[in-house]
Image (cartoon, rainbow over all chains, first blue to last red; front, side, top):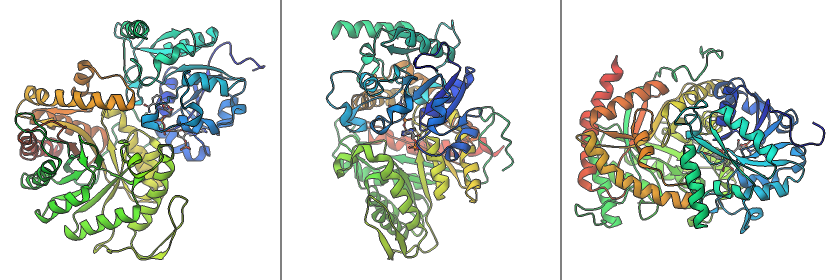
Length: 222
Length: 361
Ligand SMILES: NC(=O)c1ccc[n+]([C@@H]2O[C@H](COP(=O)([O-])OP(=O)(O)OC[C@H]3O[C@@H](n4cnc5c(N)ncnc54)[C@H](OP(=O)(O)O)[C@@H]3O)[C@@H](O)[C@H]2O)c1
């Protein structure tokens, strides 16, 4: 990729994080026909067995190798580990921020503490050479796989996609759609605040209509 | 291990198990209300838990577990003390934590307390270690939530050393080292059973195998079947580390009453109340009746209903997961002692024999 953070299409996905949600994201991406690499903070050797059994078809790699080969990188690491992540690793990449910040349950992370802006805006500020889109953060890992529905199903669920770059958000929206959810595009990372913990959508598995209703009613009361 | 890696793990069952079937009960010391819905004292709730443990043995339950919690809804910070009281009044039932929040405890003290419990109960003690999804112990004991991974990793490592018996030499970053240190009381018959409670992280499954702990799958939301690959992962990881197979258990919440309707009616308002409080702490949207119905249904993680409904669901999931043990987390803050005792009685006299029957063929 030549400097631009937005590929023309997405075929290879790198998932950073092999805890609760990373492997589920890897699995549903594989099901949707993407090539998937997964990395944790250490050596891929530690992930080989997990990958083989829990996400057959994915490739365990060092984070740097997984990212280098990817069209899209999903950040599925705990937010308190993000400040130590080298932004250079993700330079020039389209990054889906699936992380959440909720101090009462996860502890205070100074980089994010007391900020008026959404957590993904801080992630974007830090990853100044990447294009950040917030998505895949709002549905709990235990619901993410079973919540999928084919396109056109009347009971299809929705996942929010927020980005400052409309082209990048659209691309991520296409990935979400292929995975099995209706993408709901939000016009900016700031607007993505609605997807955060404490908001009306976080942790819920909602149909598009319920999702849009929640956005409208929250906007009225904000 | 004969499992071929080419078959899709999502299509197969977790595998059969060589271990005997164990059917247990867990409580978090859920704060009970009297028949007129007034909260009992914490002290009375704790005394009731002792009676519940005694009743569990009488009706044929194999294991009684108490999970550490530190709130008004679950006033149960010293589960081992309560377990000791139950041990003194029972002969057969196994007793243990479900879970001990090891991250905010001292592994040496945990070992000593459970080794003492094992002495009192003549070898009936077990410990289930958890990282602590209930986070109230962290501020209480001055731990930083951002350290939870390191705390758990290091403390599990030390606990595994302690459990082997004999003088311990150990070095870590978060606790003073031990140098050829005796840790008493010594156990009479080797290490007592120890488990790691695992949510949905495959790395935790591998960690349990690495240290030689049994695997307790805590399934509290979503479809239990999605844990299938974890049983295989656990067995393959044990093999990789050169260990013999170890038991696999499932812990899930539920409630048994005479009929499905009665069980749902009793449980739903209490569950909604607690989940609403939890949603404020954790920042998630309050679940709907629709999501509750899903969890109660065949695909969900709540084991609620008549003895037949609950027994069928337990048997199905044990088979699917290749697990040999099921622990029902009974009670919910606000339920009355009468409905809790009824639940225990039905679980012991109806659910357990029925599950054994269903799994016999
Ligand atoms: N759990 C959910 O239901 C859910 C749903 C949606 C979004 N999320 C968000 O996703 C993130 C992860 O949550 P989780 O529950 O999956 O956490 P988790 O179980 O603690 O897993 C964290 C994973 O991140 C890895 N990791 C840490 N630092 C890393 C680095 N610098 N590079 C690569 N990998 C690294 C860890 O690997 P090592 O062990 O090797 O360090 C581990 O595999 C959080 O921000 C959470 O808010 C969670």
